[in-house]
Image (tube, rainbow, N blue to C red; front, side, top):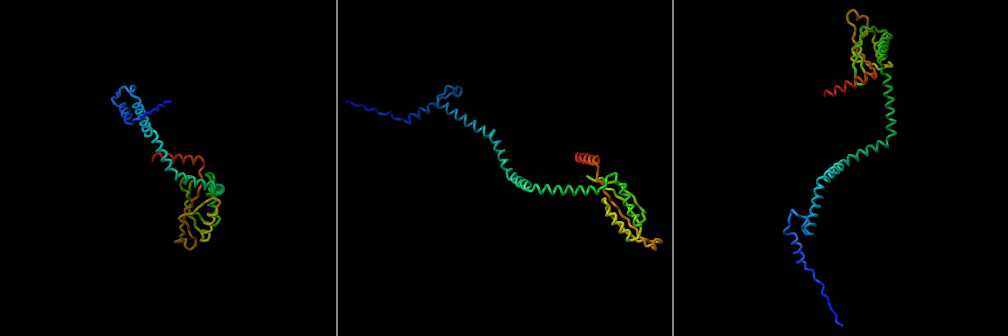
Length: 231
């Protein structure tokens, strides 16, 4: 029986490369639809690469900038988180301290007379001096000075009497239920015909304070807003 042997075809790389290169020769850029398969695939690949690159720089670069900015904020956010975590852990103690401060402020406000109580407070100051046997030579309330949340009323005083009585009067003023402070105290010995009496004279400025009512607080805030607008 006769046998036949088939010889397998050999792949010619040079011939394939020459054929592949020939597909890129003589291409008409105005009619890409008629190009051979290899140039079409190469053009499609180039378009994809250009699209990816342009898309990255046009869109993804902004996202990358935002990501870098958020990464730069991370240390500060961690620090804020640590601080807030410490506050959350100490929240019961902070609330207790806040309650104590509010009670203290309420007690201080009770020591400030309202607008309607000023007259009675002035009467208490005068009565304190008369009760110690002092003679008032001057008792003149001045102009009210309005602050942010309170008003200050200065009172010019001049009394005469014995040394211990003047000292007791100053103590009585400091112990009034409402806040009254004495400033610019000047104590002088009598001169002339009054020298034999042994009485001293004291000049001072008493300052009392009152809280502002709601209307006055609103007016102060309005004035502060206007002043800030002018700046």
